[in-house]
Structure formats: structure tokens, C-alpha cells
Image 1: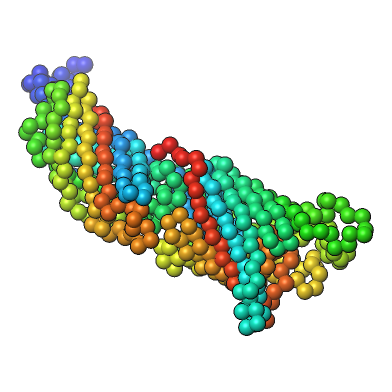
Image 2 (image 1 turned 90 degrees about the vertical axis):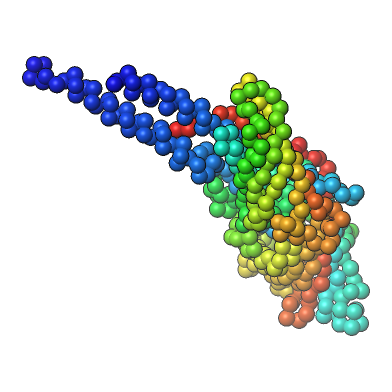
Length: 307
Length: 185
């Protein structure tokens, strides 16, 4: 203690210097805080941003897109395919024929969609359930892809070809299971791939597989805010179908006007349901076996979200 | 000397906290509506950020475009995709000042009309904005409200011919914020 006679003095000087500094800071603080008021709040809490509108509607052309119908929304669908363009002038390039599917999809939630329809081709009824397992997002939660699962059933109601033999009702049923993996790479470009299994209770030939594996791919490029070009190709793994069946290839445009989406396209597939366009496509693009067709989608908000 | 310093420090602290009063919120309410004979469109956002400096009479707002909620999902999608292009322009902001600051006593309860002037940025386009609003001071808490209208074309928002009858050219905007004191670190 005695060795340090200036102790009290030193103790005084230390806090004094500290206090002066503090004082300086306090005086200068309001001056320096003149710039950006919002910066005072500091970093914003990051939010999860889900990718939206990867495709204009929940179908690319024939294939289901990774989009679902929003919760509480009913989407009325009319699908129309004219005959083969190769029919020539006599058939007015296919316009004499018309195949139609009338249906609708409903979003039970933003992730769960149910839908159904009836096609004039083979008088087929179909119904599906689609659930979004993962949603592409950025921000607080990052998810690179959207993944959806689709289960669809189709029933052919045409009379049996061989009424004399014993026929089972179950023979008219077809089931499709599909996983849809996709990503919106940019505002204008989305791509998806859909591994698919089509189960057919009855096939015509023994050489045909009851379970058919296929991989669908589809993409979209936006040409403008309201017009996009779509393409899809479905590759059926070899040795499953009878000769003469081909892979489905479709190219088309999406045109969006307010509540409607018009899809105009060319496709070599005749049917508008999964089991049909995946396993029963016969048209050859190179021979002009192409259908001109369109899908019209009109949405109605049945259940309003509380804003 | 020591006492004097402490007193001075106390004074400095007291005056800085008293004079540099700032108020803020992260849950400000902003809504807008478009009204035409065919369709009424409304959207609300309860996540607007706002800071008001009551001493300098300045205020700033920022709002995430994607956080506007519509009754119809497709409207919300089109609003973000086609009209406001929220991917490119995620935020709308307003930076302004209270023109009649002298007439507002933020330390006394009451309702005070306010003249606000500043610059608003929507869809990447900045326009000057002048409007009247009000401040309500009650037991130390401050709330502010204003409503005004903007022209979509002023902010470079194109409305295509097919929906021209569905979307109003003039959009009404409603702002209401409840502010709490901001403790500067």
C-alpha cells in the first residue's frame, strides 16, 4: 500500500478517462445516427421464400407440372385434341375429329390437390391425388427442389372387346404413380423430371408389361410475362410395350389472361390421362401423326383466404 | 471533479435519450385496394417496418412485396409475377419528413394531423409523395395513420388490355402503424 502513494489519484484518473470517452460517444452518437433510420433496426429476420409460379398451371401439357392448385381454388379444365395432322386435307388436317376431357381440380390445401375428369377417348374416367412433399425455397430455409407425388386412377368404360370370355371389372382399371421433381432455375426457366410407374390390370399381349416404368421430363421457358413455351418428353424404358407404341413428345405455348390459362400445343399422344399418353401413344412425329390441341384452365376461388 | 463528471454524464445520457427519440415497428399494417365496377381487389400486409425520428421529424417505411396477402391465390401470384415483379424488386420503401413537426407534441397525449412529404419507391421507380396523415399519442405510445392513392403507371406497372377493366388505374393505399420506443444500442 505504502509503496504506491498515488493510488487514490490513479483510481480517479482511470474512470475519468473512461467517462470522458463515454461522454464523447454519447454526444457523437446522435450525430452519426442521422443516416438511415431503418438501419437502426439492424438485420431483418430472414423469411422463408417459396418459389412460386414455376409453371403457369398444374399441367405442363399432358404431364402434371410440379405446381398444385392453391388451397380453396377450383380449377376447371377442358382438354381438347383434334385428329392427326397427317389426316390431310380430307380430314382438314385433323380438325374433323375431336377428343375432349372435361374435368376439374380442387386444392384442399396449398399442398394437397384432388382432381378428376372424363375423357371421350375410350370413355375414360380418371381421378387423382397430388401432394407436394417438398417446396423449393430460399431465405431462412433453403430447399433446392420441389417434390410432388401423384397417384392417379383411370377407368375405361368402353365395353369389353371379347364379351364372350370371362371379364373382370378390375380389368378396366389403370393406376399411375408419379414423383415430380422440379426446380425453377430462374424467373423464366423451370425444369422437372417425373419417374413414373403405370400399372395396368389387363394388357392385350403377354409380351406387354403390366407395370410400365417411364421417365417424363418437362421444361418451360417464359417468352414474356404472360406467354411461355413448354415442352415435354416421356421416355418409356425399353421392352415393356408392344411394338408400335412410341414415346410421347409435346410442344406448346401457355398464354395467360387474368383467370384463364390457354395452352396450345402439338402432341403425338391421343389420350389426356396418364396411362394413355404414357403407355398408349402411337403417333409418329416424323409421319405427321401430331394432334393439335389445347387445354383451357379457369380458376374459381371457392374458399377465400382471410387476408 | 468526479461529481461534476458524473453529473455531466447523467445530463448527457438524459438529454440524448430524451431528445433522440425514435419509434419503430416491424408489424405495421399496409393495405391497398383497387376498385372497379367489375372487380374489387384488396391486399394486406402486416409486416411493414417503420422508424420515426420524432426529433428530426423523419420517417422511413419498408415493406416486402411478397408479404402482401390477397383473397385469391392467383391474384397474389400475378401481382408478384406480372405487376410488381417482386423477384426483381422485393421491397417498396418510403423516406419522408413531417413537414409540420412544430405542431406535434409527441410528449403530450392527443391527436395531431400531420403533413408528410417524401419519396416512395415501388417496382424500382421512385416518385415524390405528399400526403396528410395523423399521429395519435397516448400514454407514451405513438400510432400513425395515413391514406393516399397512387397511379399504377407512375410506377411503371403495366396493365394489359384484357384486364384493364378489372384493375383500377388509381390504387388506394392505407397505412397504420403502432410504434414503440426504439432503444438505440
